[in-house]
Image (cartoon, rainbow, N blue to C red):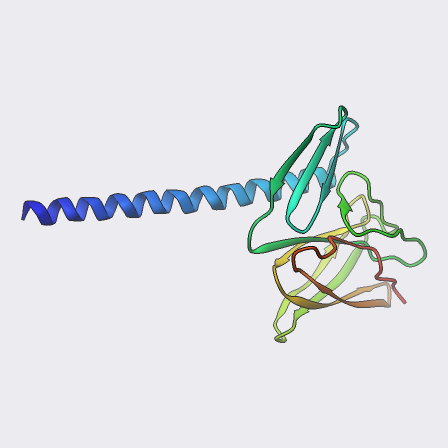
Length: 172
């Protein structure tokens, strides 16, 4: 009886430790996503922040870099739909990239390669003219964006090394 009780306590402790570890990972992912959002919407004079397929890179005025790992199962991509003006870009600068259509409402539709619709909603671009999204990793998507009777459609993917800055979706 005593041995069964001790075994039960041991199992409960293992479950508690495992659950706490999972919560910490979820907290870290939430924190990194909040940090990415803060750099995307904030105004920073003394730092720059860019985001690759796997990390957030923050550089201060003395060129010191701090890197943060992104969530293992989610990929950050920022899309700047445009009518007239764009810029070439692959790695999104959260503190530097500027899109043409600022604070405009778009109808965004994204479908994965299996036919599952993962986004279907009205979204407003940020002050930098971009729409920030977190999508499941390691997939290919069809993205369709509508604005003011015009449509842009493009395929994008979320694999290691893929672009995080999409500036090629011209609304026609």
